[in-house]
Length: 339
Length: 270
Image (cartoon, rainbow over all chains, first blue to last red; front, side):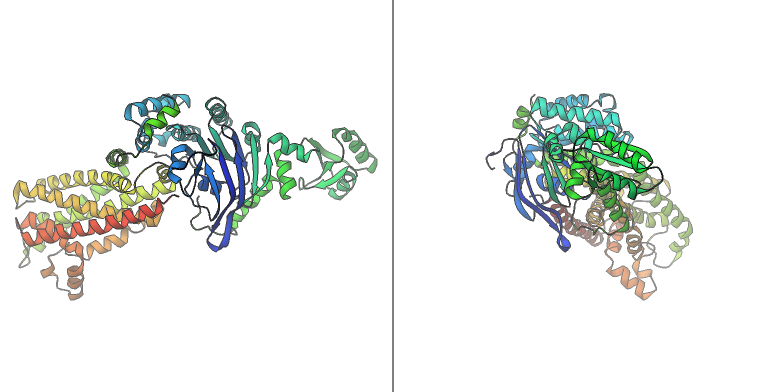
């Protein structure tokens, strides 16, 4: 087994995964995730997030490049990687006919954890994720949030040093999402577990991640702490929706205050040359130009603005685009690609 | 125990038998808890047995028919139908594991493909044993007869279970290939046709249509049925039993090897 070189961290260099037909789901990714930190991997559906996770968890070999997880090479020391990691993949991978406790028993046995220790650790984790009362109920009756929490507990059973969470809160209600966030934060802060978290939720990345990598079409387009990334964009934007649908007039007024950026389809938006203090001048300018405004909003820079600045599309827009491609069948089927 | 201590305890290769035991436990629990998988697989062969026995009873009047009790004759077919359901049930379970991600979860543990195959078949084996016992009991209550007596009943259960395991192994291949439970279900009619093109309704020498008799002669299912039937009707027929057991073992060996290879291929991690 290879000797640990990066502790509990993750390193990747030039990671590529190509599928049949030359489709590059991952197109040369470099990563450096510090031990004990939470790394948020943010991007729309089909951006390459899950494929990256599958490579880093050894479920899929890279077409090119290299990666080390907890000091183990993902290609030459897959077993070492698997011993060190826990993973909750996109779907809660549970047997609907088993109870939470039975899942724990099976998972513990497959990892070689002695029965008594496994039972003790399993009960402890079940309690920690708030499933004690449902521990002996079949998973088929669980809610989405309960399944996610059990999935997380199973991923933690053998005490992994690195945890991969692939869109762990997709489809969850706000309470379940917050509970999961608390648990993830606790794992990193109090137990020193490195967390690699993929998400399509800006709020999740902002709330949890120490560093964020924004991925689009298989490439990392921006990387840094949420604060650094937003500072890179720096200036706020103003979006205006005209009352009489006269977008052109609204855009003409706005462009005096900065450069136009894509915004609502009914209005226009501008990234301000100066700060938020321009807002009063903008209102006066609309008034003197006779443009009636139905809605005017000032946006502080967000990770969505970072995504917009780096890709020319909003994250929501990219999401809709990906969904549309899926619906119309424009996205080619990736043979051998993970779900 | 801290995560570090836990990792230290878990270090090293996990014994194969422990993996098989736990996966077998899961497979049996999963089977028991899905009445929708047990009930049709168990009841349907009994319904067909009742229909056939009622409708084809006069076949026993044919010159050369080996018994005067059609229930005894038809009982063997019930075991084969249970085998068909084993293909579907086992295949669907494995396909479902792939669809819901459970397979990926197992891939991330130090699991060995052989443990997965053996574990998956444990539920099939348990159901096969239950069905064999039930069919013998119902057959006897309905007026059937086991010529080879109680030892014959035990051999009958052994052969029926072996056949169920062999068919279950085919189900594993189907589960790996079909990748969704619905696709596995789709092969049901195909297998059923295969089953009917055998000596299930009449002894081969009484089938008058040449092409049908030829197909039935080349169909291995005929020899599985005849092996089972020999215990019920003839007593101890070494040739029929050797062919029945031999073919069941051969199907099991080939299907198991192919299923293991397929699962091993799917489980390849870096």
